[in-house]
Each structure stands twice: as C-alpha cells, then as structure tokens.
Image (cartoon, rainbow, N blue to C red; front, side):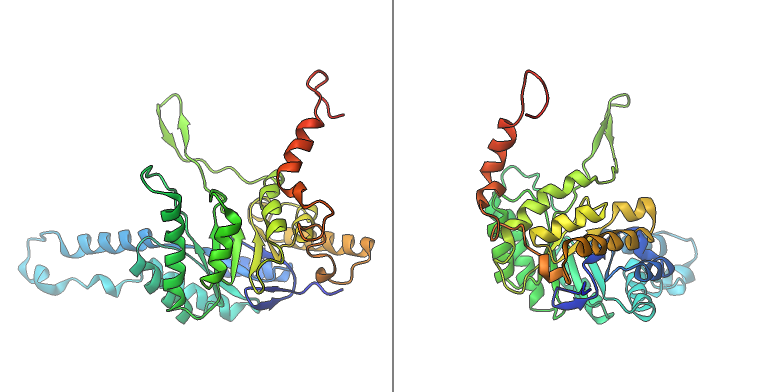
Length: 338
C-alpha cells in the first residue's frame, strides 16, 4: 500500500501532518509523533511581536534605568544582544528537530512588519527549515479598509518574501475572503507552493459578570472540516504544483478520508493530538489504511479528488445546490429529516 504524497514539493510518507502547536516544542514528543506516523511537522508559530517586546523589555531592564553607580551605567552591564531571545531559541530548536527527525520540519512565522517578515523568514531558512508556513493572522477591523487592500496585504507579503526565501512557502488562510478561489489563484501566481484551509481565528468571549473581554480556547470538532472540504473540492486540480492542506477539525480517520476524497494533499492534526496524545496519529493512519483495503485502493493517489468538483456528476452541489437541498429536506412540523 502506497501512502506517499507530495506536499510543498516534498515527497512525504503519508498525508498526516501535525500542524503548529505546543507539541513541537518538545524534541521527544516530536520523535513520538514521527514514530506514530507523522509525515512532517509544523512548528509552533514564531510571533514578531513577542520577539520585539522581549528585546525592548531587555533594553529597558539593562540600559534605561539609573543604577546609581556611574561605572555600571557607563557599560558594566552586558548588552541585551548577549542573551538568547525567542528567535534564537526558535532557531536552535529547528536545528535540534532536524538532528532528531527524519521527516521534514516546517517553520511557522507570524509577522507584523515587512522588515520583520523578511528578516525572520531568512533566519528560519538559514537554520535549516525545510519549508515555511506564513500564519498571516490578520483581522481586518478597520472598516475603512477594503477587501482589495486586505488581499494585497497577503499578496505583497508573499511577493516580497519570494524574493528573499528559496524554500517552499505555505500560506495559511482565513475563510473570510470574499472570493476564496480567486485569492488562492492569485497566491499561486505570486509564488505560493501551497495553501492551508482554514486558519482558526480564536474569538474573544465576554465575561457577563465582570463586564469584560476574556480569552477562550475551544478545541475544534469534526463538523468544522466541512468548510475546508468544500473549498478543497472546488480548488482541486485547478493549480498544478499547488499543495492543498486541510486544517481545523480533523479528529478521525473518517475526517481525513473525506478531505482526501475532496482533493487534499495533506490533512493537518492539532486539537485531537493535544487531547489524545501523539499515539493517536497511528490510529488515524491505521483507519485510513483499513478503509483503503475495504475499498480496494492501493495508493492515496487512487482516491484523492474522487469526490471533487471536477469529478462529481453535479459540481453545483458544492455551491448553491447543497444549500437548497438541505433546506428542502427538513420538515418544520416534525423537526426531522424526510
């Protein structure tokens, strides 16, 4: 049975790729993921704001306070560059993972400024990352900003980075674009090697007793795969060489199989691994293999995209027709499907 697949131009042993999470912070856990079938690993996201804030804090601590001793104020204290910061630690961790693992190691970067994106992306490449995922976590809260301006933010970033980085680039996208398909096409033309659909934006909640915002983290559910499944099915086969990754809600072998049937090149695992541990990767992989045996498929390529917009009898079912069919199949009086 051949489970290999192409992802960002890399040949990997199967379609299961743990996405950015705290699990990648431990070399031993990363090894456990690999031993249980993970075909590549995406590191936790490196945030430019965290690097900048840490550097500014160190400068204030060492050089912007009056110690009362002239000899100290005149240079006795060490320079802040002498201490390892979040970037240094991240780069060192790439090297450790590369030494410990045989599978590809993909760095994840979340920047703010053009210079920050470029500098840190170059650093990650030089540290040995096999590919780079751009986690462009951006909420367009400015009501004066147009959709075209938001899209250009992503495109200009990719074009700029493509001039400085040679390793494959994966764009992790939100589902909030007015035309997801067109955006993916423009990213492919600008040099993206792949897209991950879709980024889960963690929404703030409201504490009704304290009358304030509060941060919340709710694990994904299998129901969330349907949005990515629809768009992957629509996009499958449209752009040669562009990898399609499904992220958000993959908890079972059935979830993964559905996304592969829609046309995904890889499926990303996160919440389920945080909840059940790295060994659960092997259970999902075994479930895929058992299903392939039942169906008579010898390779992932035999069934990838079998239920995409290019192959189903009525492609409109991925668009408006499904909405009409679902509403029509529900009985208001009985409350059950008929």
